[in-house]
Image 1 (cartoon, protein in one colour):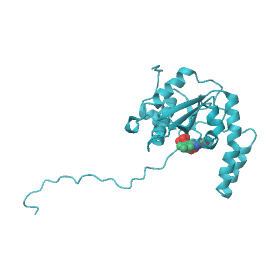
Image 2 (image 1 turned 90 degrees about the vertical axis):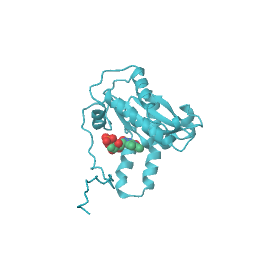
Image 3 (image 1 turned 180 degrees about the vertical axis):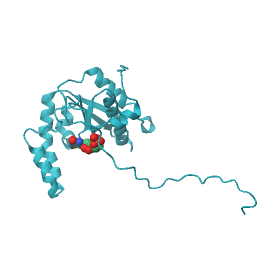
Image 4 (image 1 turned 90 degrees about the horizontal axis):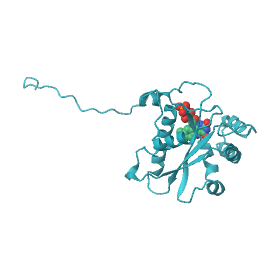
Length: 208
Ligand SMILES: Cc1cc2nc3c(=O)[nH]c(=O)nc-3n(C[C@H](O)[C@H](O)[C@H](O)COP(=O)(O)O)c2cc1C
């Protein structure tokens, strides 16, 4: 495996990762894509099934076309929520210059084999591995869940060679970040219970 120099350890990468939506024009080379896929397939996998397969798109024309197909589907879905505060999302998505992939150079779609109850879970674990590896080598990434309805149409599945055995699960854009941005914040972990064994107390017959 091609091992580039990395500056951060695993925990530092986890804490530094954030969704990136502004990219430079620098292309992601094949060797780097291969490295990301190798990191993806190191994810834990139920019953060792490895139920994933990948589509890589680095054709800007195809990405723009896919974005244009996806946009009305996203708007339709968001309108279905019938909430007033979602109108701005519909407006943004339908803007002619809006690209659902934020002009990223590369789209990687993790597809799940249609077998086993944990196929999707395995693919999401692979997705996180891929995004952390991207962060470790200085790339930015973002899950683009909103493109899933478009990816699941017969036409797009056929164009991307996704056979009936697979379904697209985790579309991830990858590219070189335009700016250095801090990770987003999180709430404190909510701990519903934390059960420890009662501490063993030295007892003497006098305690009784
Ligand atoms: C399942 C899933 C779907 C997502 N879909 C989109 C999307 O369609 N467009 C987008 O810009 N971000 C999308 N995101 C990114 C989230 O908005 C982002 O992870 C969240 O705001 C937290 O920010 P962070 O990743 O920088 O910590 C998605 C994330 C997940 C996990």
